[in-house]
Length: 404
Image (cartoon, rainbow, N blue to C red; front, side, top):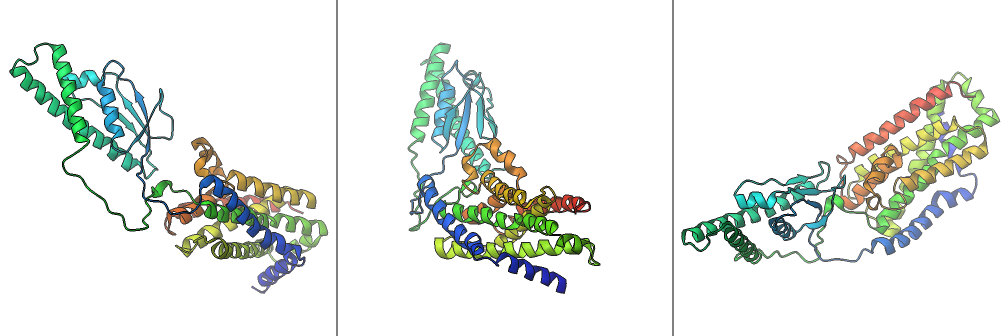
């Protein structure tokens, strides 16, 4: 423990030996948080109070029933149950979609059971709502069809309609009248919201500008600090101190582990400062579940410092190490959603960037800030970050066997 404590102490003394360290360690991250938050405010909107709004999921529709008009009647019913419809020729991947068969009108008029195909997203919490909306529309149209069929049967017994064409016209007229009448039901529900209540779809909620800026700049600047382990190891290798340590009686794993722990402690300190700064200076509420924040922060820090150790085995000079640390930190942050919300990017992009630890960190931080995720709910993301850390450590240790 004495050796470990000595390594941590030396790392802190080394890091803060220059006054400029405070600029990059504390002042610039907070200034960038303020600047980015102000910039995102224009794009994402402010934090002003809003009244409850209806949630209208987007549903892509392929309308194959072009020979009859009852398909359009069904679409009108869908629009009445809080669905936003978008007509396409082919359903896009990763979105809610509905296919109406080509013989929809024909089967309805023939009295047969007709099937529409709904495509939902198993990992999206909105899937149940979309399914219920479509079922509600089916129930509304189904009930109107039963009324229309009953009306046609009565019209036939009274010789009001005598030909198939007259039956079709009468059926469609009764169907449309029934659906129109259903728009103004005799019994309605009036919902009273408490003052100040905000209604949102929690599964799709985005972080506001202050939350996005606070989490994003934390990820960006802390990565620079943690990946800085590469600069430290390269510097010590070039000065010969690392060689002397590696040939000493102290185990190689103890030496490397001590240096990583020292740099990890430095990164966790910076994280704590930026978390507190985000709360006090920008009003970001990080305190809903401190354990969740701590779990994500620790695993992300561990993954980043492990990547720094691996990076040290790939560069040969101090200049290469410095450029690699800054370039990699900025690249991982930009691609991982630290500079803009991932929710505004295409589905394919969000899938590709899952290979980055910064993506999982930002996803978990956004879940905590915008959706109130608990520590149990961020365990999957923390587990992935821990997996990144394990991978980087194993590869780094294997390469350090030949490291001089």
